[in-house]
Length: 269
Ligand SMILES: C[S@@+](CC[C@H](N)C(=O)[O-])C[C@H]1O[C@@H](n2cnc3c(N)ncnc32)[C@H](O)[C@@H]1O
Image (cartoon, rainbow, N blue to C red; front, side):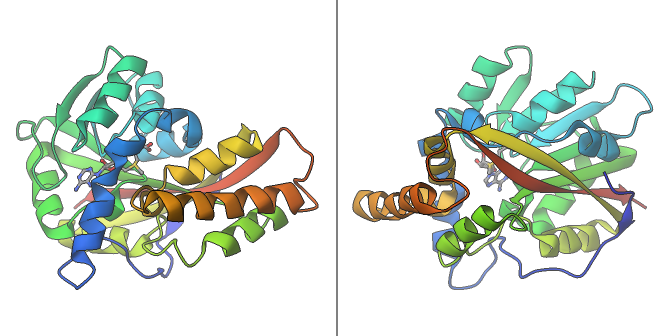
């Protein structure tokens, strides 16, 4: 893991705002229930060092995982010994979380309306989720639920396109992948609303998967989940074909799909 560095310049944002793409963005934000089954097996987990950076190593914290989905980040936080609660708007995603992590308390809710008491968390984390938050109301809620000195940890995994076959995959899905996940603009707007200082570290994680898992993982992306059946079949067929033909992936039953992880720690001033 690289050491903490100041927040770098950002890419275009993708959070739902007040523009003309609002309706489509909201449909995408609500699409996760339809891909809840198998989601956890098809998405990468988060590197422990990145999560430790977000939470520090100073003892057991009360952590709220917002946009927790099926609990990929929740699991890492709980594994580090913290007390963690999970919030997500999708009951289907939370049902998967409970099946995987029966000891974790869950509640249906959003970042803009958190179903927890004031000053009840030392830290709030969000994995691959903060780009769905509406920054101003979410920041108000984060301030309400955090105790003094609290922190917000935002983390995204992004496919590592420095690897040639992963770059080819990225080109194939570039047009559809608007509203990119690793969204530093989201961090900046949330940090501005919170008046928080931001530090970031980069880490990495590798998913060992078969070609069909790569296809299935892309099928869990919100922009794919909202396609009609024919479009989705055509789109995923193109991914399958690329993996069957690319010199680095053809004929292989197991692939190493690398991700870069960016973990942003927002400390309330
Ligand atoms: C890409 S998934 C990430 C799930 C999980 N954190 C993980 O790392 O696997 C994004 C999650 O954000 C949730 N979400 C969408 N809009 C949200 C909002 N406004 N507030 C909180 N969560 C939201 C979705 O239901 C979905 O479960």
